[in-house]
Length: 264
Image (cartoon, rainbow, N blue to C red; front, side, top):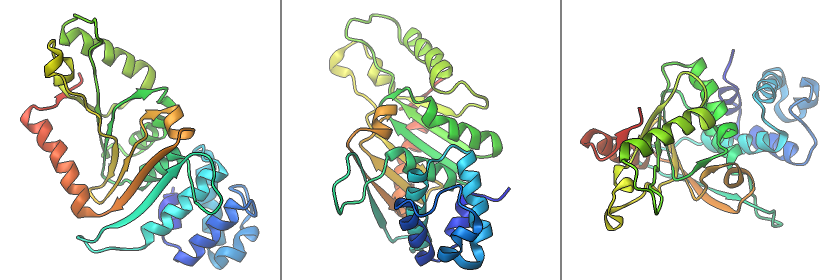
């Protein structure tokens, strides 16, 4: 089965812009027939219709598909290894003349784009099952895809449990409520958040998604249903291999040095 994002990214930028505008205005839908899409993409209508059907089956809504089309148009613009191409991601209530999109739609489009590696950091994972399920499906379909999650495991103000017990409780909850599927991704945490001495504690507060060492979304949004779909959040997508790899190498260094520990 063809990758719908690959199909869409292969279209000319003006065709992608036309599709996005038509989807945003309700002129076309994910269920539109190829003949209805011909005005935007001509002879590619059959392929686009098939891509739309795959997105529909994957759970995408029309507004999310419109966001994906806009992202695909940006992907189409190729930069050199050192060039930074940036897109602003604004989520929240609409303001006339200012484009907004649910963070979740942008996140899902990035998950679809990944071919080899997805590196994620998030401060809070709560009611995240619906956000992570498409990622779990992608891992199931592409078992060679490497997914690395970085999470914050904190000690409650009055919690005197051992680090091992706190991590065990977190792991049991995470694998039950947030990622109940197989196979599982790598999960890492900062042990300093569990120090008994409050003055020594630090948290893993970073929030980003890095794709294949070339694209990164840096966002204020946590991995919660409210943050991804309703809150006012601000993020930026950098299509820069230089900056993306600088970020992923930093976290790789923390893992390799023992600064971060794996969740068993």
